[in-house]
Image 1 (tube, rainbow, N blue to C red):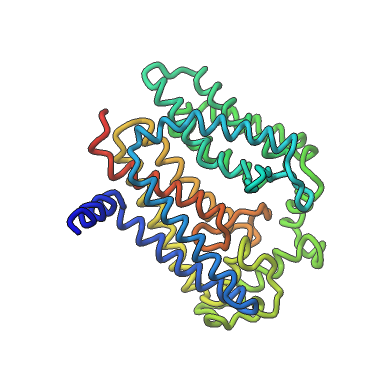
Image 2 (cartoon, rainbow, N blue to C red):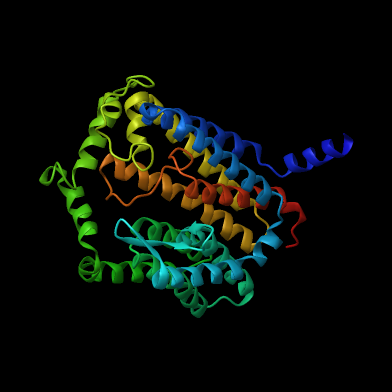
Amino acid sequence: MDRIKRWARQILAHLDIPLLLVILVLMVFGLLTIYSATASGGFAKLDNQLVNMAVALGIMVAVSQTPPQKLMRFAVPLYLTGLVLLVGVALFGIVVNGSRRWLSLGFVRIQPSEIMKIAMPLMLAWYFHKYESVLKLKHFAIATGILLLPIVFILKQPDLGTSLLVGAAGFFVIFLAGLPWKIMFGLGAAAGAALPFAWNMLHDYQRRRVLTLLDPSSDPLGAGYHIIQSTIAIGSGGPFGKGWLEGTQTHLEFIPEKHTDFIFAVFSEEWGLLGNGILLLLFILLIGRGLMIAAAAPTLFSRLLAGSITLVLFIYAFVNMGMVSGILPVVGVPLPFISYGGTALVTLMLGVGMLMSIHTHRMLVKK
């Protein structure tokens, strides 16, 4: 019994309680909203999400016990494995709904681009840590190459949402490593000049998403349907919402993908502006806590990794709420810890576990 108590205390010692509490509250909101969005289908989705959450929490706990020094050892192998799997997808991947994103390994089907959401910040944080004492402009150029290589494969799948998140994870590491502002302004100007070429490289459905953002009413029953219905749901929630299980847009099946990408519309309709304010406060607390952990991290590797993971959580929330509200194009990004699904949740909790590891092992890391 004493051994079990010591083991339990050791596990709890490596969990950041404020961070965990915020995530658990978000998950409860997620379960309530998923049930409301899928009530007509019984408890199947809710049961599946409970399993997803249990697995994700288990992974988070396991990673939180792992010191950052050991996490660093996985950086290069994980990145190279992800890159090889992305090449495998390009050559042998399974086509689903016109996109080649999945790879069958016989006993399981995986989406290698998800691996890159964690492998990318790990790899770049390791790279900058290795060359911390001699950082020059060439190192930032090499880091950019490391970032762009997998993004090219992900864009060809095509998967704009995942490429955005992987790109953001890598960019935040490069930025936090000290990328000079004049380089950033130069890259911004170059990106602006390249917009016409980038527009021509987009797929037809991606162009329609951008044009629909500017004028959803141009195709109200087609490309604009998602945005029109989600904004109606958000607006109809009013100050205090219609009440749990009382959303008319939700239960009359007007909201598409209502338990995944557009779950924020369901939440807004039922909980209103007050609920949205609470949700935003929770995300602010989550991101603020992550930034505090990054600021207190003792090594460059842990600071870059913690900062990148935290800012990617912000990008997840900002992009999802923005696209559902009609201020950003629809790119298929879930709302963190709220949307239904296992793959994204496991990826997010893996990142949270790394944050906890960085914070609770900070006194054991040699500077």
